[in-house]
Image (cartoon, rainbow, N blue to C red; front, side):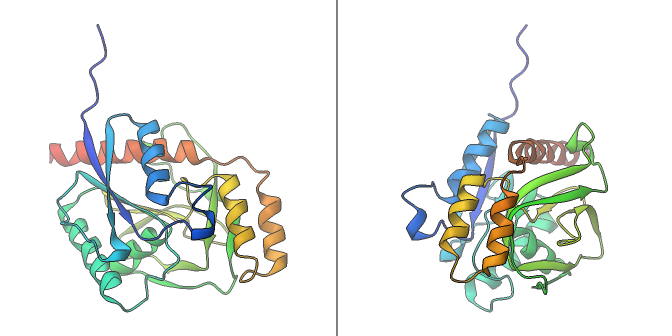
Length: 248
């Protein structure tokens, strides 16, 4: 007998930024990177994109779950779309819809729910960063001690919301992965980015990132990247979160 097919779910991709213009001929846009990775991890997940950074903010109940892209903008910017997105995250939290914040989205999740985000005194985080796992939630499956992800950020979550649970961190970025309740997951790294994209992005930003940090970032690209595994976690997080909601 064939195994029962997974329930089909719609995941809203909240696009908060886009691939720089000088790289868009070589790489697909951020929303497409995420959609491809999600579909590969769980064929039962389909995606629809809202360009949040263009002011296109959906209803919080428009999809079964939500995931964000990263962004070159700051969650502390004071403009209509940033403030609107902050309110959106609060409403999604109240509805207890699964929400996965990647980089900018993780920082917005923290800010919207009572944490603090600031520019780091340690400077740019670029290349492949290693975070130590300090808690092993059910959606992670088999035990892992570390996770390697491509990063590209200047700001960090420096204070977690009161009800947050830390999952992974490092000396450079202590709050790398955390959750809030059963429905919200924040990941500072970019599981959708490849080492090739990280290399191209660092090259494009040589004028704004110190040369020694670029060198360190380039050297780090020899590490294996756990992007595929992380998207498997994200897919399981969505499924488990919705399953728990239906049993309450």
